[in-house]
Length: 281
Image 1 (cartoon, rainbow, N blue to C red):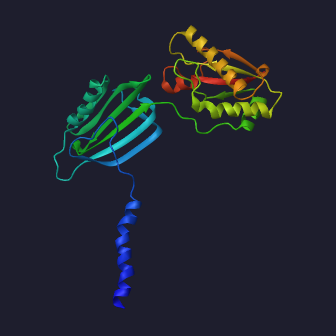
Image 2 (cartoon, rainbow, N blue to C red):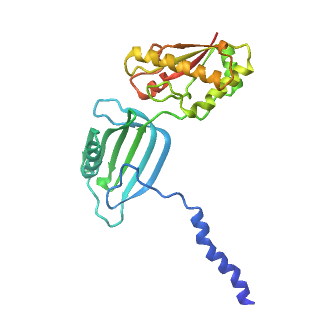
C-alpha cells in the first residue's frame, strides 16, 4: 500500500520538468546582422515589427527619429569573465557598419561608458540605424536598432465606413494600396483595401468618385506626375475588372508631389505622401 501511494507522487514529479519547459519564454537571440561581444550574454530582448527610436546625432544636434522594424537588446558580462571596454564595444559595432557601406555618425564614449551611433543602407532605399549604449565601464551595454520601414496597415475601413466618409466628408485617404517601387503595378496585399472600395461603391450605387494618385517628392516632379496618373488609372482598372464597378462612375487624376500632407524630408512624411485619395464627384 505504501508503494501504491508513492506512484502518483513520483509521476507528478517526473512530469514537472516537461510542463515547465512548455511554458519557457522564447530564447533570447542576437540581431540577424549583429552578434554580441565575446563573454557577454543577452539579458533582455525586445523585437517589434514596427516601433520608434531616437538616435543621438552629436552635441547640439537634434536626435534622429526613426520608425520601422525595431530591436532593443541588452547584454551583460558573464560572471567571472573578462569584460571589454566601452570604446572597444562601441567601435566594434560602428566598424562593422562602415565595412558594410555605412557610416559612424556620433561617438561619445570614455572609460566609464557612453553612446555611439551609426547607419548603413540595407536596400530598397531603406537605412538601418544603430545606437550602442555602454554602462558600468563595459559591464553591460545595449543595442537599439531600427530598420526603416512603413507601417503595415492592419486596421482598415469597412465598406460602410468608407461610404459614410465619402458622403459626409467628401473624400477619404487610402494608405494601404501598395505599388511596386517606381511603378504602377499594384501589389497583391492591396486586394483587401480595393475590395472595401468596390463594396463601398456597391453600398451607394449612385456614388461617383475621382481616384487621385499622390507621390512623395523623391525624383523628378514630371516623372512623379506621370507615375501618380498611372497609379490612379491602375486602381480604376482594378475596380472595373475585378470589383465589377461601372467605369462611368470612376474618374482619375494624378497630382504627383504637388499636395504633400507629410514632411518630404523624413521617411515617415514621405510614406504619408505616397497615397491614394478618393473624392466624391
